[in-house]
Image 1: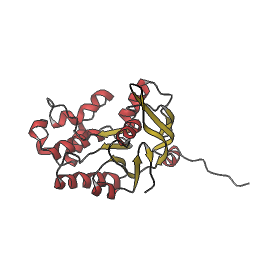
Image 2: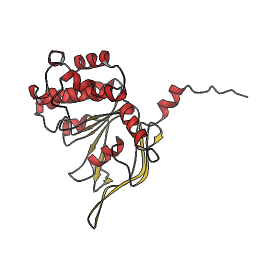
Image 3: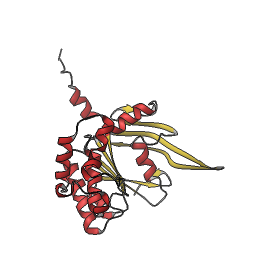
Image 4: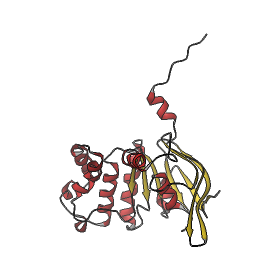
Length: 235
């Protein structure tokens, strides 16, 4: 009889998809109208992938990203992050998952205007009650803003603000980075710098999912999920 070795917890985690959706659906109501923003889609995102979510405006891209980040709940279907089913989670559990598992980057940066660069990057640490001073310093240096750490958002360029937003998204060491049009408000040269940073983070093992209309960014991804009318389209 051949004995099989038990897998370590690390090996088990490595086999679990970062995100897995089965028949995922999100329905909104506008008066008497029913809008199926996400309409019965199934997909899997593996650890270390770089995935671009593309499609025309109104296709359901941002809704899908909100579902993946636990910022919204599905109407039906199954969604698992790191092997955990989101459907049965309460608000407290979802909040903890967002703080520890997912990092968010938004098109309009989402920085607090009265806080400095360092304070904005450190903000998630306050909510998670961890001392992140060393990591904050390392991330500010990583995104090339050490000389701007005491500046406020109004004193930064668009590209600098987006780099602050990326550093803030990484401060709690998430397994999944979600970015909604991260280059949407930036010129092409600045967009290329943000793309280079996302590529570098992905090469180091971070799973990255971006919603984008930027063809250069979409072409850099390992694969695309194309949405049309809330469904995955074959290209």
